[in-house]
Image 1 (spheres, rainbow, N blue to C red):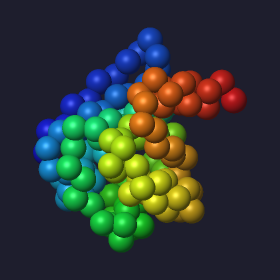
Image 2: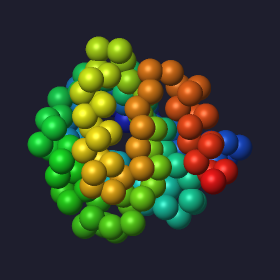
Image 3: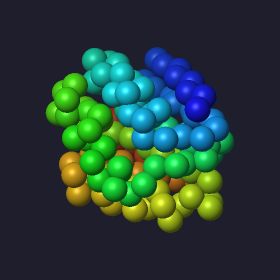
Image 4: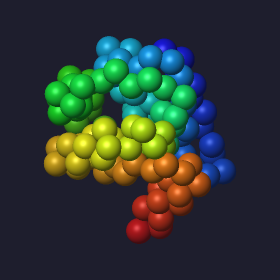
Length: 126
């Protein structure tokens, strides 16, 4: 898995882009570190999975916070995240969104990156 992280201080957002096969083991630790940066900066996160082959089960999604973030800081689940996905992954990520919201996450999936950024910007204005 390739994992690119960029902090956009103008938009006050952390941008993550992955490529290749993405598994829970590969992604979990990295997103925890990124969420720590987001927590310190008070920035939301934009995850772009359009170039990825997601190999994560919904069971792994259900346990995501407990397995990867709660051990670091339970506040990590409160960081808003927008996920940009391919049309063929939309149904899977709709389930990811619902599971995460049920577990206390602030999350939404999008097919369009600009709409995702707009959603995150709107959250910051609230």
